[in-house]
Image 1 (tube, one colour):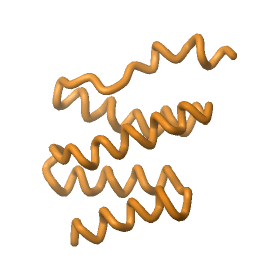
Image 2 (cartoon, rainbow, N blue to C red):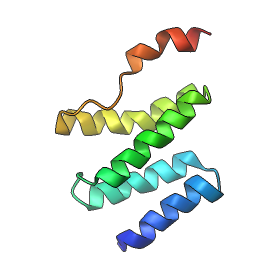
Image 3 (cartoon, one colour):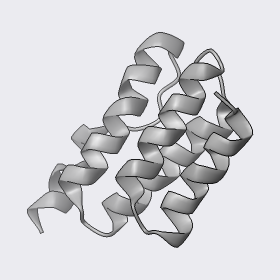
Image 4 (tube, one colour):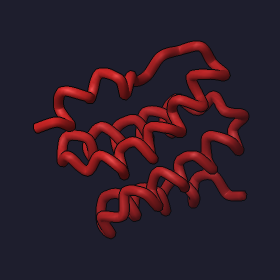
Length: 91
């Protein structure tokens, strides 16, 4: 896999095509290909999930951020806490 091309594809999905789920999936592939330690890809996934959350697109945000939860389980670094969303989702 050409990782530079994959990053450009992810950026295109995110910025130009407005397809955040496809962008997040592509960033996940990049992160996986780089051994699960690619900070740029992880930050992009987190950013996409956070943007979806701000737009109150809850299911999509949880789907994207669940990938970060899996990553957190391996790395030990907390990136999000969905339990804190309860009050926001009620509004």
